Image 1 (cartoon, rainbow, N blue to C red):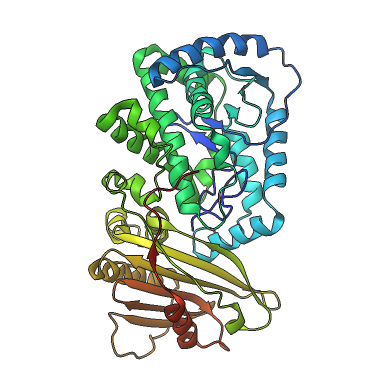
Image 2 (image 1 turned 120 degrees about the vertical axis):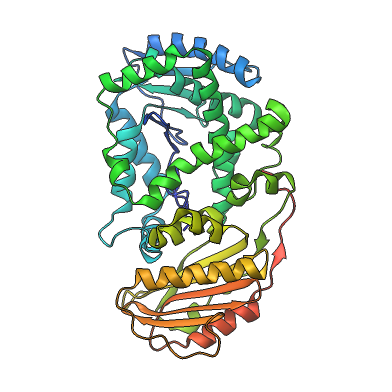
Length: 451
């Protein structure tokens, strides 16, 4: 379910909540990293923000060991200004078709209810949580004008770390991420946000009174987490992943090689959420397996079209499993050992039918078998009152069920698992699987990806 929606989340779906990039710190305060904004009209509070920016930037530069190459223009913006920025970015960078496909994929994976509206959710969430943002395009920083400046200096430190990253590593290179590579994109976002969050925590630790001032500011400004609290779990946790998982990853880089190693990671980017979750795989340069996934739309019928095509990754498979298993330890274990994957979403324009096809490679046959068993359990928990399974020779490698949404089929061959959900009655599951297996030729991607 991995995606981004430009400006972003899902250009497909699991960077889903990184729209411009929303920051939700442990305190519950949010910040947005905007990608395309217009310079706002001068705000009466801007002079105070400019003065605070110079102060916080100097200290943040010292903490992060990145010299200030140029001063950062800054100012204050009203809630209306920021909401207009969010909507403008969303409309410019995500077509209605992309947004609808991402929403459909969320629902087909069982991660959002049928009535869920993705675009409205993103706008409401970011408007609720925004505290400030740095814009790589204009190289400007803005703080929300309804927030106390002294109490929000930790947020400023986070966003000004982005300014330093931009000056040294060019954040704009991440704006045009290749389609269909969202898991690697989420990993890169985790590096960027985890780095900034780790700096912010050091900024707070340097003077514990800053944490107190931040909490007072949150209380005084009536900060709410209503939108986050009611968000589908997978979206909420994916939103937090770059900050929480990314901070852990950044701290492991720092412990191993200091800020020099953190900075080096911008040249040798993490290639998957697996590498964020297991830093030893990043250090070992364990690259994901590339899955060559055929377009099976012609085999489904004249009205079928592929509307989404992407990579889930270990993080998303953990969420996909645990949405129904509700046993985080078991779900994490079943998602570990991920080697690579590819999924595609197909829709029938005439009937509204939706089919989800997945092909997942694992490190070992044992890993594949563990995932297969977990997905079987997930399927039986997701689709209520399933009729008896179709007879098959080996239930450890092949399972199929009839559901109100179409047939669900799982097949394991060695260290790979193929999954079809929503197969229409007129289509042959065996023929679809045959196409997936015959045309899939796994290969390793280059050991280091550079942008």
